[in-house]
Image 1 (spheres, rainbow, N blue to C red):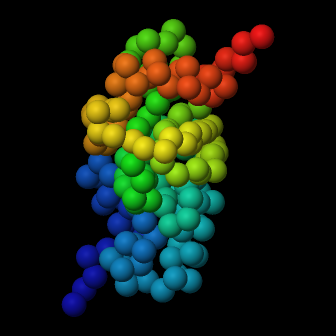
Image 2: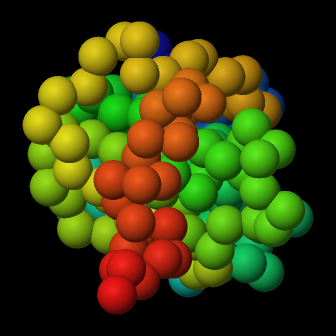
Amino acid sequence: MKKEFETLQQYLEHLQSRGRYCFLRSDIITRLSLSDNAFKKAAHRLIQKSKVIRIRGNFYTILPLEYQASGSLPASWFIDFFMRHLEQPYYCGVLTAAALQRASHQQAMVFQVVTTKPMRPIQVGNLKIEFLHKKEIYPHFYQLIKTVTGSMNVATPEMTAFDLVRYMNAAGQAGFS
């Protein structure tokens, strides 16, 4: 039986043609019947050519030509898939939510995500993702917003206002004197 895709690059082009820009190493190894070592070598070659970026652990993104210079995709293209992979409830909040709701007059320098587990920030190319911790996240805290590649959870305007006060330092405000 002939394999549908001979190389990692062919399979990633297939994913990209279907509007999907992220993948898991384990899925690729299974789908292409690769050894772990073969995947590492193929992925390393694509990373060197700025066609693939490893975000964290088992999670990678495909870089279309127009994003190769910046070294990363916009976080909105993959954050939902990433957080579902981690099995973490989340919503995009604070300054990111304010910008998405057109309540900010400038673009946020950091993509801010509120989740229930403390997580280290991610920096890949020009992309910076900051994770803020909240004990509980309920569905009424966020709304589903359509993105280029699917959807993502974004804080409601009311939760954004609350979080701007709660996460004052992340919002760029020093404490009151």
